[in-house]
Image (cartoon, rainbow, N blue to C red; front, side, top):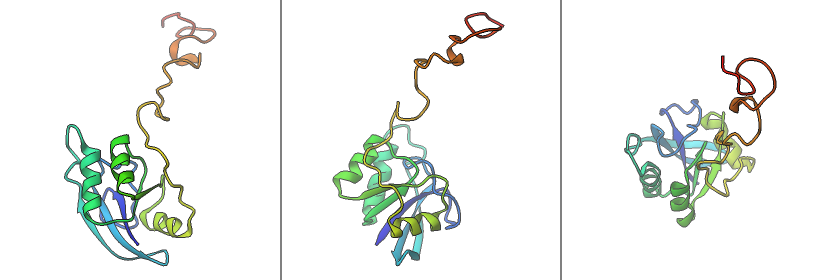
Length: 148
């Protein structure tokens, strides 16, 4: 199976990049029995794009004829491009590239069923929790509307 892994370097022991469209590049790996048999690092030309980085990165990955992508996070546009091409996307946070590939082969790496975008776990709660961050809390300076 051919897999693209978002990466910050060509080192197979480095962590999977937490981002897809703006990662430094992709490791395109040929995987057999849970091990990387061969790999190449492909620089991501979309890294510094103002807009459309995810789509450009997805098109680059598709041009390498991969069957799966491993990344920390994908935006909705990149996810849609990969999904339409039939490429499965798997999520790996805090794993090095070799371990992520092993987990993919073992079937224990979670498959992404939707893209992450604004409002999906990025701390954009807009103050609805009533916590101290919006000065809605209890006592003392800085809380409850009393300035420092």
